[in-house]
Image (cartoon, rainbow, N blue to C red; front, side, top):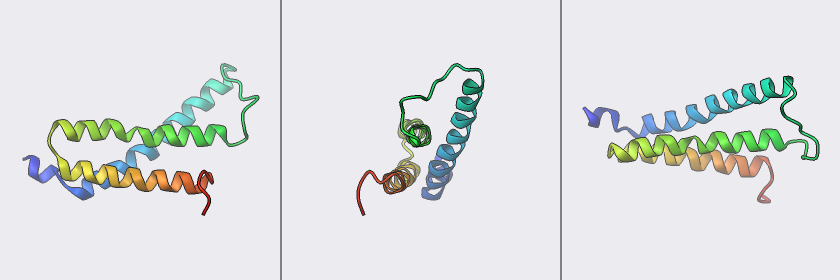
Length: 100
């Protein structure tokens, strides 16, 4: 049964879906804490929140990678890694961490 679930496209799909969903959840949580006055954003750059939440959301793929690693689903793990590298490159390009 593992061979049906060990799929490159499953890994790519999960590797893209989890960071997007995680970013939405983190942004909602951050806005909720901000509305209660528990967070203060003074002293940070204007895009600090977006930049940091996006990076943390990309790091959520580590959980999926560990899940596939323990189940020896190497094709799915490769798909997650591929989507993680693509999202990280987009993050680097979007926030101009590396000049292009």
